[in-house]
Image 1 (cartoon, rainbow, N blue to C red):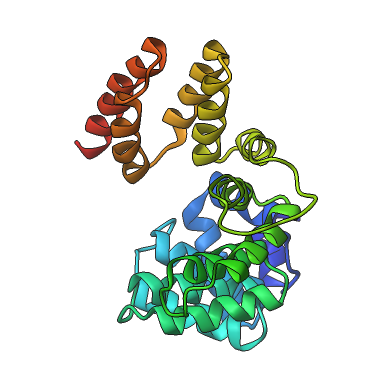
Image 2 (cartoon, rainbow, N blue to C red; image 1 turned 180 degrees about the horizontal axis):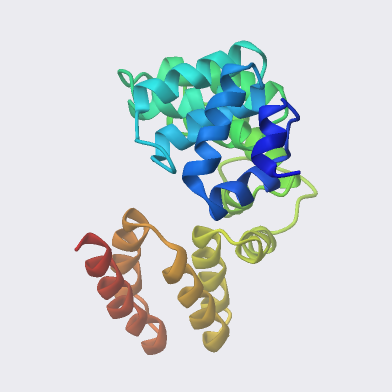
Amino acid sequence: MSADWRLRRLEVLDNEQLQAMLAADPRKAAQALVIAAGQGVVDAQALLGQILLDGRGIERDAALALKWFAIAASRGHAMAHNMLGRCHEHGWGCEASAERAAGHYLHAARAGLDWGLYNLANLWGTGRGLALDHARAFACYLQAATMGHAKSMNLVGRYLEQGLVMAADLPAPKVWYKRSAQAGDFRGQFSHAAMLAEEGDIDTAVMWLQRALEGGNTNFLRSSVAVLEQARQPAIKAMATLYAQRLQALEG
């Protein structure tokens, strides 16, 4: 039985199967999701919001994505709450409001969603939409990190390295940076490389910088160029040129 037929019969697929559908035939998958979402499959409603936001297999429509996220969130879907938070935080399909974003992230975090914890921590850690509270931010990052969330692992390391919180009996920052790097976060890979360079393991540091370069977005690359240009080690400093070239290529 085909994957889209199972969706039509309201048999909910897991995320891996849904993503496989989208990778194989985005338009066909989108058509199936529209049907399933209209028939009340909550996972389909949340994923339909995502593909509408991304323009994947369907015309991009952030306002309509917001509506589908809201429908799924009203039925208790944690990721839909998280994505509503993202929409409100960044003004996708609505007026930007960190306060509204915080409310939805809180719903997702209370449901135990790692991305909800991470996004809520970002607001607490920067004082956007919520009063600045590093202790609460760190607690959320740590909870998400212990669930395997790569970006949160990097930020746990940063909090410990900068001494923003007192946390007894936790591994050293370099341990969290390594975990983040190995889990695939480009910022974690950069942080891990920095620690390795300080310890004198330049070859391994360059390898992790290369991995971060391959996965990094434009904001990351832009800020990293300035950091790498100040490096003491020639091999590390030379990576600044590669980062600048990659940034130029992405920006067109």
